[in-house]
Length: 298
Ligand code: NAD
Ligand code: MG
Image 1 (cartoon, rainbow, N blue to C red):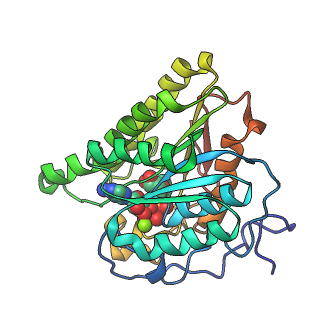
Image 2 (image 1 turned 90 degrees about the horizontal axis):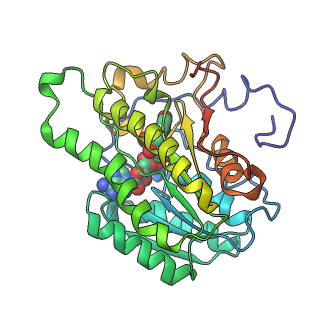
């Protein structure tokens, strides 16, 4: 079966032959080591000039949803800056190569999103390297499951909020003076924001925060011509899951609870980000685009 976004395909069958597997990986994990491999759209995504001349910053752009989004953005004509952790250089360099092949100017700037100074330098490096900024995708994230609140360490609670919430605040605040009217900010939230799992209390709380931040900021920035929206993925096959995002016992059934009966691939997320970044969504503000295999959302 053809595996792309352009063929008439039964979505229950698309990727249904890619079964998740149990595997231990240390945080933050690598797409290069994910078994089976995730589909980032590298062999399939076709651009049509929807982001020509645009300048995008994507956090967590080395792997998973962020990497698929970066590939789509570059093929739509955007230049792209990527943020990731130094341990992820291998994944990042592969993505940088794919973006350059698409003709994009690329800035790769590794560092720790928990560090406000890094977040500010990331924006400065992006603006310098790309000559501006008009798409910001706050996508980097941390998810470590925990079964009992009494064993959830203060450090993990703090790190999860720093990575998922504070970094979004620091980066967006630093980016705002550079964003012209017409710019788009897209935050990656989650089905967990409204359907929290008992084992993801800290993570789910950050995602609910991201939803409120997105809607409030959307209202604040709309009069300035800057649109803020969110994408809420369901279970997607990325390094986030086998690096402690899920217990090993749940990995091999990952995604089977969705109405489509399977997990999603990063390549299925990228078009949502392209839509929200491009002028096609000019009247879409403060929206959450759910890409989750059919799970009900508010
Ligand atoms: P991923 O592991 O490929 O991407 C997450 C990225 O976050 C990493 O690549 C890493 O570069 C970055 N990151 C984490 N901690 C960091 C830190 N301290 N400093 C710098 N960068 C850091 O996994 P993904 O699933 O593509 O995750 C992308 C986003 O999607 C996250 O916000 C995640 O919460 C969200 N999400 C994922 C799923 C899913 O099922 N995979 C579901 C809902 C939401
Ligand atoms: Mg990664």
